[in-house]
Image (cartoon, rainbow, N blue to C red; front, side, top):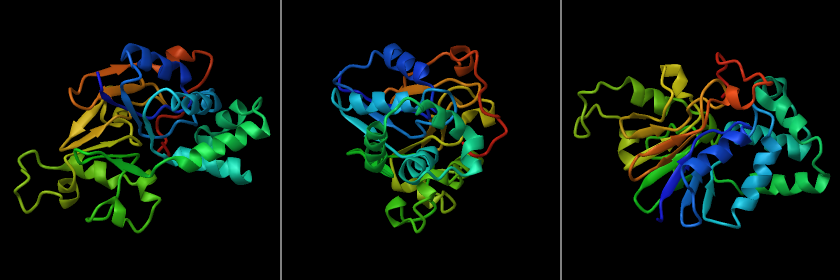
Length: 248
């Protein structure tokens, strides 16, 4: 089969992750590219990290680091727990580690350290959690935090005049650098959309799993996608994060 499947923001929803892997009939021949934000939100963040570490023994996986992953990494490293993180899903992450040993946490920390800021495949397709601001591409980014926080790339694609073509002087130069760009970070729910969303040459795979949406996985060649059940139905006894939050 040899597919490349890209997975959006999971946010502690282990049940959703298992659903989409099953529904997409993922096999050892598939390459999986995860766009980050594995943790913070629902109750199984530590369990997801443990599962993903084992998954690497079975097949080719690329793990991009999201802003929530960076927060969790800092906590595992130094115990830092800023209120902004705790209020945006971090408390559930801390609770999920309650029964994990110090050795387990060290292994998880090493896994976070190994995550990539971005990945470019042989077809010049970029995979990144949020975006970049440099007109010369992410490798020339001045602030590495933009890999995990930038929204301007997506906002540019969303606001573009549909009449613009790639030969226009007004076409955003950042978008011309890659054949396609795959991101998460900004939920498509903000635009009233519950499925992976395409604007210009950007595909947004964050379909709101942190809130009321589903987790999505997509075949980057065919654009066929599979989704989990909405996360609140998988975790009926839990509260999702406030959908008005901008710290996704």
